[in-house]
Image 1 (cartoon, one colour):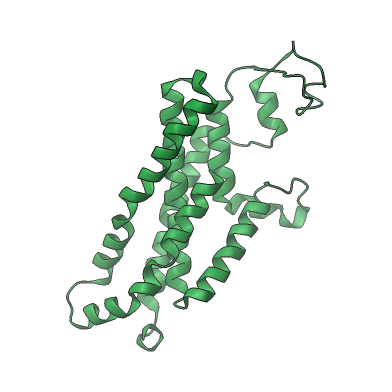
Image 2 (image 1 turned 45 degrees about the vertical axis):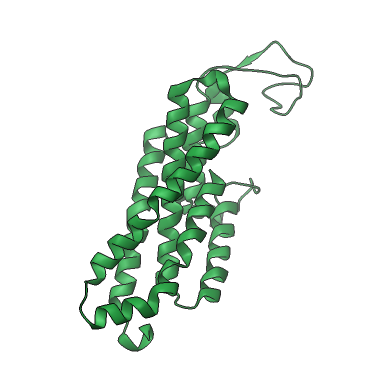
Length: 222
């Protein structure tokens, strides 16, 4: 899920800067409105974007967790779709705000690291004054939704001690309730709440990107 958010963001990052000259010429001749261009641009790449996670998960899911069944597979694919579309929305926002591709790349890299780290990944002990950032992280909501879908039944200890203190090293008989494991890895909210926030993240950055394009002065777009 982390990869699909990043994939969507960087795929969409260059859309507006690369087409800037073309759209200015077309708008100057009143060939179409900005809203028509924006809708076409945001929808044009969706078939390819959603095809990539479908192929990847169709292979990896059945190799890793084949016992979870087809219904779980469909749900995971759906969350991956939302993850990549959400990343696309953030990419559109950055690309629409920064006409210079190098500046956009730099900002996108900082945003990705900021949202990933402060979303609870790689760094668990986040300072209290930065804890608010996890609520802005699509990485967290996508991963939380996937984990909630996967971990629904009690998990057997494998003796490795990786889930200590839930499972001690050498313990191969205990069963740990799924809720305990989810709390251990920091999963919050319900599946519906996480998906709902992802849907919100799909639309709000797109609206902000359109607003950014609409309110730029002519001199800034040349």
